[in-house]
Amino acid sequence: MTSVRPSLRFATHRRTLLAAALVVAATAAVPTAFAQAFPNKPITIIVPFAAGGTTDILARVIGQGLSAELGQSVVVDNRAGAGGNIGGQMAARAPADGYTLFMGTVGTHAINAALYKKMPFDPVKDFAPLTRVANVPNLLVANPNQPYKTVQELIAYAKANPGKVNFGSSGSGSSIHLSGELFKSMAKVDMQHVPYKGSAPAVTDLLGNQIGIMFDNMPSAIQHVRSGKLRPIAVTTAKRSPELPDVPTIAEAGVPGYEATSWFGMFAPAGTPAPIVAQLNKALVKVLSQPETKKKLADQGAEPVSETPEQFAAFIQAESAKWGKVVKESGASVD
Image (cartoon, rainbow, N blue to C red):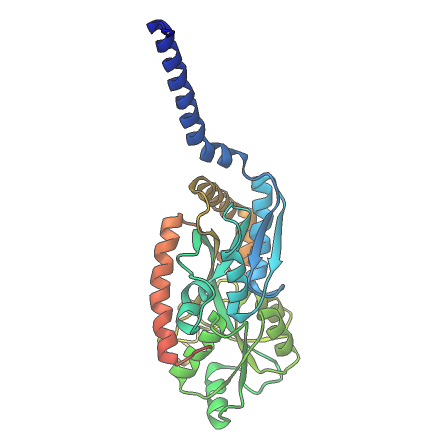
């Protein structure tokens, strides 16, 4: 029987322990190395509404800044339909590697869960919040050929012609839709909702006078207001917009207590590694703090916002409770 010297056994044991330590160290370093290597290919931002609408406009502004900050191209992929749920489902099922992001809205992450009887994704469990990017007033606008110029005139006309005022939206359950439902409820008028697959096609029909009014997000309506193609009646926020200081709020123009604000935020699929989430949040916050980005958003009537993922998650929870109540009281529902 061959014996093994104690010194040789010790050396072998030492080499084994060293190898094990190296494996543990290498494994622990994987997330850090992964984060340092990210990104090494283009990033896609899924926008759940049609091109030309507010969500799309904001995503392209943010995407341009993010591309410069991360050194990779950022592609916007429009996936419209079902009030944002089609794009939301696609983003929720994407690989959780940081290369697919989602431009969510108050609709996709605070309204739809209360509105739709069946949701194709869970707004909380299926996403990792990165940061809110902007708050946006909705703007009550009318085709210039319509007979009303003020909130009071609109209410009087709607009461005299029940069901004949058509208001368009970017889709059932969107903030644009519920702004109209809230107006109907508080002003006690009967108006007909006409949903579209995004704000842009709704605005097209508004310009063509196929529908009379919209409670549109300001970024997709403000250029048409400035050109005289749409008539501004009121803003939905509690305070007037700095971009349209002469346009009153709905509350001060005849519906006391009325207030509705849209917001937009960036998400990654749930399970995205924490270092990647932190890196994307840092990059987005930096982009949103840049004077160029601030000006581009302000020109659209949007207010830049940045926060930590934890702050954004808490905000979403509060918004879900608020809008869930509005949906219930409005009686709105989508199969």
